[in-house]
Image (cartoon, rainbow, N blue to C red; front, side, top):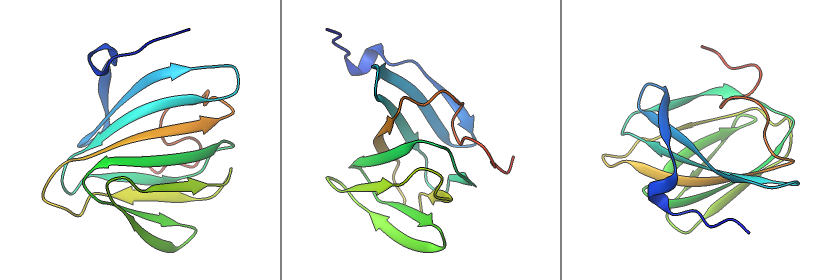
Length: 116
C-alpha cells in the first residue's frame, strides 16, 4: 500500500506556466498532477499510453486530433494511445488536473513529437 498526501508531491515547471509532479505509480498505471497558469499551453504531442485527465479546478481547453473540447471541474477526458493532443488554460485562474496513464508512463511530460 502507498498513501500520498498533496504536500508529498514534488513539482517542477516543465514548460512556461505548467507545474508537473508524479503522484504514484503501480504495475499497470500511474497518476500525475499538473497545475496550469492562465494562458499556459502544453505543446502538441502524442505518446503510447492511454490517458485520463480529471479536472479538479478551472477549465482546460484540449485539442485532440483537431477537435476542441473544454473540460471543467469534476469532468474528465479519456485519450486513446497515440492521439495527438495539446491543452491551454484560457481562463483567468489556474487549472489543476490529475492524469492517469496506462501502462505507466515512462517518458517525460509531453511524450514524443513535442514541439519545444
